[in-house]
Image (tube, rainbow, N blue to C red; front, top):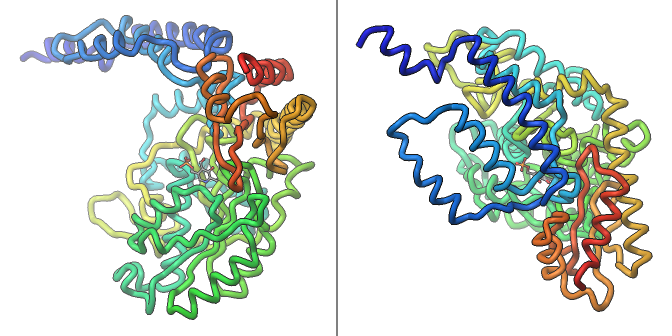
Length: 471
Ligand SMILES: Cc1ncc(COP(=O)(O)O)c(C=O)c1O
């Protein structure tokens, strides 16, 4: 095959500059239009699943298809075939409508596709990410020498915390795993924490029973007294406590565990203290509200997801620690084929990933463009709209079940509205809003969370109407 023939076959993969501009222009024009239609339409999928599956089955990848058609087809499937995080009445699970600078970052990064495994291959990118992560860590109150890196999400960041805690507690964990300990290693989370912790315990090799679920205090916060009791009993049984996790903004109800108290217990016990602030951590942006997280600055490590309330595109978690050297102890490995092996610089020896996308640009651009002030207003606005919703629902006889300082509301319906599952199903199938049915402290509740940066009071009024429609 001649070079000419080969190039004509692959030209759709690597088109000319003119062709790239034409297709880019098409996306630039069509995507905002689709987003506008989404905001006017249903929050939930509206497509015919059977027709979609049969179209999809038609892609046998034999004969190439025109790229213009494929791009239009892809936009249409996402416009009609997903629950819309970008819809202002998606009151869901922390998934945000992304900031525009974060979308721009994805486009820029996609075009250059830098490899962040080593500093040598992408010095500018590694430095930008380290810079923004250090700024976030310092804003959370960690000391200036703190370090951080982007992760695929909160789960990877929390996994990193457990690895650090286990290795700090017993350096032989690196070679011998859980066998290195004199008894079963255990860590403490509240039963309202994000239960990806169970998967993390499983994957780390300490097993799911190593994740101790501590009782809550009746209002969704970790019960510090129950924690000290559990620690005492575990030690008496020969277990080895390695970490206490406080959640700053529980997934279900936006509750903040007693951060100061947990920090003190962790210090007294000599164990790692991790704060999982995956969603609630964005409160550090607001001068008015950051006091809610007092005690976070005492953490050994912190998880904050940029892809939650900081509203970057998914997945973009962040792991930060005050102990810079622990990461290279946990993740160090040496090879001959990598261009460098510097434990102070190279992300492949200080993080769980190897090949690494340049995620940090998403938050860097957003934060640089809006400043802490802009993000502060963003979180304050969500909380103010939640206060409005609380007022409106209470006036209609709904019972507020949680007392969160963040933008999550758990509510029990007034008599005559039906059970929470049927209310949630009714609202969701109407396409007018997305909410969840859940349990909070043993009570059946409707969970409503606001993360969308462009939601308005009008959207709140519409949600209230949707909740009472057809009751
Ligand atoms: C408190 C908390 N921690 C961890 C996670 C897991 O984060 P991710 O889904 O980004 O892995 C979540 C997700 O909602 C969360 O709310």
